[in-house]
Image 1 (cartoon, rainbow, N blue to C red):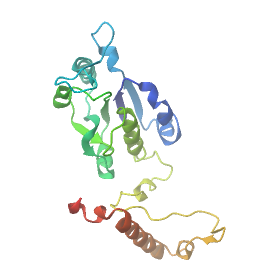
Image 2 (image 1 turned 60 degrees about the vertical axis):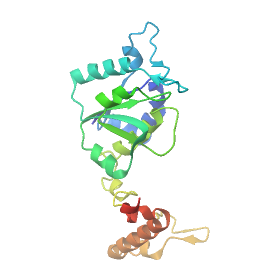
Image 3 (image 1 turned 180 degrees about the vertical axis):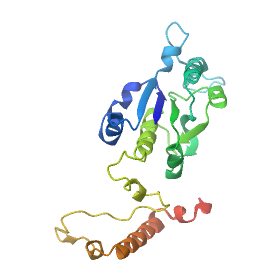
Image 4 (image 1 turned 135 degrees about the vertical axis):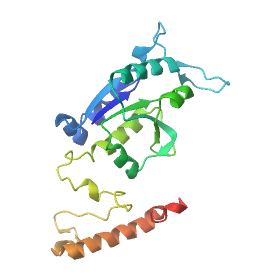
Length: 228
């Protein structure tokens, strides 16, 4: 998969993309990241990319010209399966959405800043608008890092155990059950006997019961999606 990212602050991705699972995915060539700075496409002599919004609202908005020229330049060279804009008013990111994006070969992610980007860019170019939650952060970069981490880890081959991602929370519509590791007894607390029994039928049943129990308490909306 090739993930191209439009951002005014490419340095913000150094930490998240140069450590842990994403780093290994890049090194193993499961994913490739390309970064594009809209400032490089600005026709303003000072490379300005923002201006005051019409209507008198406070704050600044990213202007359409650099973004439009950047997108036109990129799409003239490659075909993108999706052009994604990270925004608080987008569709709420969930595992089902992440799974659907994992089938794409090449995507472009736009990162807004200040008050966001000119609506005309959203209307003309953006195919998907994605939110990581009902709150506002300073720009799209951190949201993009979250999105990319969720996406990259489910690309086949990225995780050492190909079944690992399939047992994560939300993959089956439930929260994950509790997990334990060695030692079996730690400071007076013991691992449930069933997990040490070797009876995989009973283990699977225990995991399902615990997943349902946790989901019912913490996220009942997942059990009744029509009531969200």
